[in-house]
Amino acid sequence: GGGGGGGGGAGAQEIPGYASLFRYGEPEVVAERTHAALAEGYRHIKPYDLYWLEEPIFPPEDFHALASLRAETGVPLAAGENACTAFQFREMFAAGAVDYAQPSVTKVGGITEFRKVAALARSHDVALMPHAPYFGPGFLATLQLMTALPDSGLAEWFYLDREACLYGNAI
Image 1 (tube, rainbow, N blue to C red):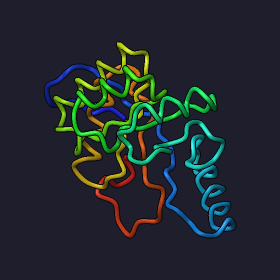
Image 2 (cartoon, rainbow, N blue to C red):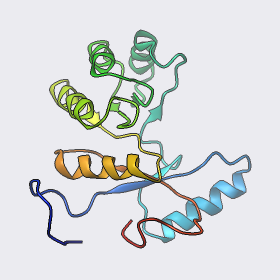
Image 3 (spheres, rainbow, N blue to C red):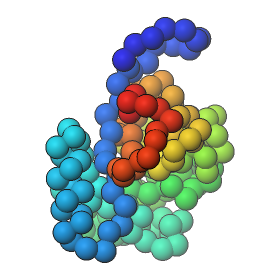
């Protein structure tokens, strides 16, 4: 890491991440991709060793149903990739619906609204786990936010074979 330049405050030089696997229809393929990610050094893999259950209720804005499921099962829940404003996250937190908030910078209204969500999450003792299955500006904006925010969780990285990567070996 490293490199100077640009304004802004000091932030993290490295951000921990997890391998976000695609939905594979065959257990053998899931096992192969999981072993490959582990061999590359990933310690957090979606769906390996359940850390949270993501958006198990439809529609996703049914925060009371989400809170009931959380209370009845004790399973840590994550949601928010479909929430579009800090107001929706405030409702989610007030309902006690999640352990992990997953704002998506491209859906929630950009960097300013994302920062509002992060502050709300901190004030409600909800961990931040950004939703960022992107390859371009949305991913880069998420990484920038994660370096600037305390306790910003794990970076989501779509784990797949790429013909080329915009970031070279930086990720």
